[in-house]
Image 1 (cartoon, rainbow, N blue to C red):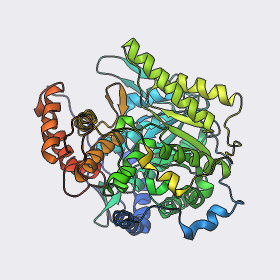
Image 2 (cartoon, helix red, strand yellow):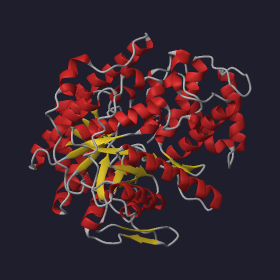
Image 3 (tube, rainbow, N blue to C red):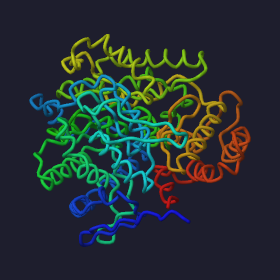
Image 4 (spheres, rainbow, N blue to C red):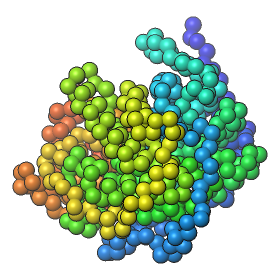
Length: 540
């Protein structure tokens, strides 16, 4: 006799709202009428502005392609020169951020992150996730349950997972990262139009978790990804005010840390803080997406802006040092936290690999702490203690070092643009590595997982973006490989792709969809702004 299947819930839909994604028991608690009404309000108020800003991004790319360089904006000089303004006071649970754990919001990873010992958990609904419908909704269920202290999980192997404590004061502060402005949510329509993935994630999170977070003595906090202009931050600020008014919570309750992970945003750090002001919680050096954006923005400008192999670009490259030092100076000048970049290393069973990984993480975090960062990211619970030890040695009993103003730092536009001073070569080894990592990552991404261990690193979408965009840039600028003397052509990329596929575990058929997507964005005539956009269209 077959087991009866749970009945799919019915939703109480506001006028003009349609939900086309499959429904499972429990989804109605996240897709509540309150949440869908907030989605509709945000969409109707802000969608046209979102589309205008996405169009403005393309205009910036066109101007760079025609020879104009990025620069600090003259029309906002008064914001940068006005020393009187500061962001809001540090919010409860966001005073001490010396180590932040990042990761996707599936149930097992949520529990592991909450038990990691980190001060903050970046609960990632973006690059370490995929926008698969189940992930969008179930991620919010898991966040709510973690805040309520009711979350548990049993693996298919019979292993049980639970929180080490239900005292939220002893657990990491949850900071949710929604999708970027460029991604739609195709499963929720308002007035017949797709909604913004950013605003859907915001609305579902706030309606499910804002009040429980406030009851726990913290608040609804976010990491905002991939902004390219301070007017995009203004849309976020307006969304926060609309949402807070709708939910009856005071303005300024929401706090947001902005990732400076696009090249244009590096020239508008102060303006981004200013736009969010009372909602600002700091800036983060999202360095891997930043590299992707550097390549994307200057992809047609030839040798003057050509980066060497991905693995040859380190944080000591002059243009990367300029970026991180400016970020620390900017944040501390305005009373905001400066949060360092991702350490993607994960523990290995190979003792020698493990030793090298921990040494690299320690060196990376030591540089950040000494530069003035108030905390930094790790991608695995096994790296939390190493990061914590480094920042403890610098901070001591202080919760942060916002008072370290870094007035010694002076960064010009030329410093941020000094890509040509980056040491290293473009090689076939690097080309093969880009093909290998991109295909392995995409093969898993298409199944619904966005955080993927590849070659002892925890990769997210940024690595695939860097890899495919480097190949596109090398191909369209007729780059000669330093180790073989060959010119990068479409034929060479396709041949090496087949060779790489032959070396991967499994069969080439296992990677067919990933390979097709990779080649679609790596060797096409036109550059796709984000590979996740066409990939999303292939998902049910």
